[in-house]
Image 1 (cartoon, rainbow, N blue to C red):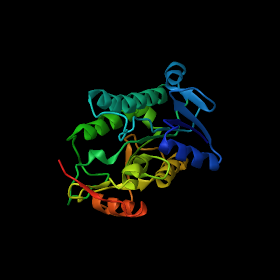
Image 2 (cartoon, rainbow, N blue to C red; image 1 turned 135 degrees about the vertical axis):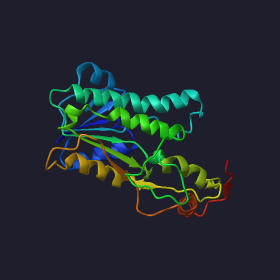
Image 3 (cartoon, rainbow, N blue to C red; image 1 turned 60 degrees about the horizontal axis):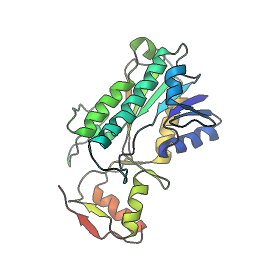
Length: 256
């Protein structure tokens, strides 16, 4: 199977690429920089979709970039890096004479309003209530294919929680503060903390790429929440992570 991965050089993309190659699949990464096994976003837009059986978009500016201020420029990059790349891939798929059988977008659970009591499923109705939920709404809309293309291309949206793993994601950003003893629980600590390990997320994506359709796929997006089954809070996570870092969890960060 040939798989095209937008943002394949990132944290989740590296894990997915490793998994797919270990399974014997061929992977091409869409990147900002050219290189072996890569095409650029400019090449995608000018030359169209290369031959592939499945396509995935993981591209997006890091939400926890410690080198960026949370200002209008950063917010604009959060949007454009996700929505523009998703539009580019969905447009290339729609214009292809031989579109892939699977098209997977990885968005996020930020669409669900945090609650101490509500339990959300993929069927839960929701409306944008802040910057990130608005982003998810536009992001997923950008991935939708025309109905005639959707008759043959399976559309899957995976909404993961915080992606955890040794080599990147949330852990990479939190490791140093906790190791130095300046990390801690946010506010009351009762905030829900949905999460997933990067290996599990890569496995979910690979499953949808590899699973053939027994019948024509629905023309709507199939949405799946990619989170661990445990109902953890910010306190639960910071307690465990602080213990892993040698008991270094000294601060209670005030809530806003």
